[in-house]
Image 1 (tube, rainbow, N blue to C red):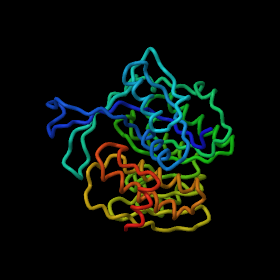
Image 2: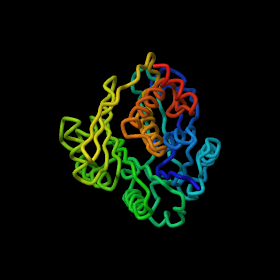
Image 3: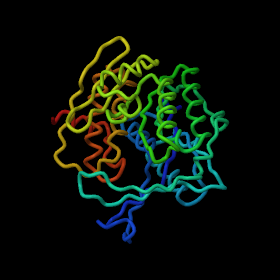
Image 4: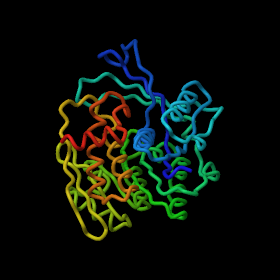
Amino acid sequence: MAEVLTIGEPMGLFVAQEAKPLKDVQTFTRLVCGAEVNFSIGLSRLGHTVSYVSRVGSDPIGQHIRDFLKENGIEDSYVQIDREHLTGMQFKEMAPEGTDPLVVNYRRHTAFSHFVPEDLRGIDWQGVKHVHVTGIPAALSDSCCASVEALMDAAHAHEATVSFDPNLRPALWPSHKVMVRTLNRLAAKADLILPGLGEGKILTGLEKPEQIADFYLARGAKAVVIKLGGSKGAYGKEREGKEFIAPSFRVEHVVDTVGAGDGFAVGTVSALLEGRTLEEAALRGAAIGALAIMSAGDNEGLPNRTELQHFMEAV
C-alpha cells in the first residue's frame, strides 16, 4: 500500500513550441500538470509510494493522465472516471528563459470540481504515513474544499501526518477574503506548513518570516518552513522553538520557474519520511526546487535518488 496520499486535479498541459502570444501559436507539446501531480512524481522518483486521489473525465485527456500516472509509478486506484464532465486543461506559453510563463487554465466545471467527500470512503488507510494537500483544490468548488478538509481530518484519525502548501491561485477564488479565511482554516489542520514568503504575507498580514511561522505554530502546526525566494533559501521553525535558515542552491541557468515550490515540497516531505531533521529536509527541498527550474515543463526536472545525490554533492 502507498505510504503517501495526495488529492488534487491533474490536467492536460499544452506547452507552446513557438515564442509567440498563445493566440498565435500553432504547435504545442502535450504533457501533464498539476501541483499534486508534480509532488507525486517527485516522491515516486525518490522511491516513495504515492496514491493520487482525484477525478478525471472519460475523454482522451483523462485517459492519457491515468496512463501517465501509471508510467510514473503513481497508484491511481483512487482516480475516479467521470463520464459527464471533462478533464481540466492548461496552456502555457514559451516564455523567455528565467521568467514566469503565461498560463491559461480551463478548469471550471471540470470532472474534479465535482469531487465530493463521499468519494473518499473507499480509501484504505493501512500503511499510509502522510497526506500532502495544497490550497488549489479548495478553490475549485465547495465540494472539493470539503473533500480536502475531510481527507485531512481522516489522516489525523488514522495517525498520519499532514503537510500543507498554500500554493495561492487568487484567480480561482471568489474573493481575497474567502481565500485567506479558507486557507488559514486548512493550515490549522496541518502538521507542516510550506508557504512562500509572499504567500505568508498575504495570508497572515505579517511581514517577517519569524512572525509568519509563529502565526501558524500558534494555530496548531508542529513546524513551518517558509521559502524566502531567489538565493535567500528557506526559514524554518519548529513548535519547540528551534529555528534555522536552509541555504539555497546556485542555479546557473533558469529555464522554467513553474514547479519550484512543488519540488521544495517533494524534498522536504521525502526527507522527513526518511527520518531526517527538519533542517536537513528543507535543504533537500531547496535542492529539488533548484533542479525543477533547470528544465522545461512542470515536473521533467524532478530528480531520481542518484541525480539528487550528485547535485547536492557537487555544490
